[in-house]
Figure 1 (cartoon, rainbow, N blue to C red):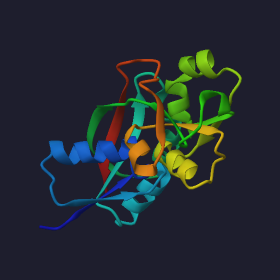
Figure 2 (cartoon, rainbow, N blue to C red):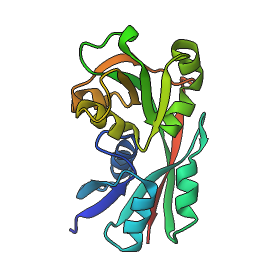
Figure 3 (cartoon, helix red, strand yellow):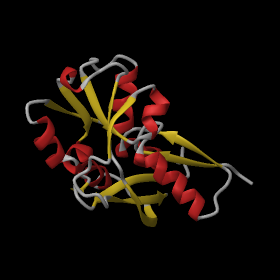
Length: 188
């Protein structure tokens, strides 16, 4: 059986990677590989070029609303929607080891993560600089690799702590405790 190539709009450890694994599990797809493409635009470009068989990316969150990045990318491509499905999204505040709360000067993550944690951030980190990045998991990877300053914390999935050698300072910080994101599984 042919190995299915699934492109996701995130890095290793992202919610999009989790969604791809969930889609494969639910649909009995056992022989597959995930290609982390970071952006929705890259996923849809690779669908166009038939470099991947399936693309998975977020379209809307129960708290953060429509994923604007996805809307813009969708407007530039033609594809078939195979499935719309949701997964729960639990955000964590991750830091480099040895960093204390008072050391944090910046918080970085994808725009959607910042929206989904807006009240938490305002209440607990009102004086801290917020910075949008292209992906939650990539933010964690960048912090780990020194591409973000060590006084930065990131909003990312808990799995990123283990993957990138980070510490979970707080878990479940999204404003809605039952936080779900709808994903599209698309093909050419």
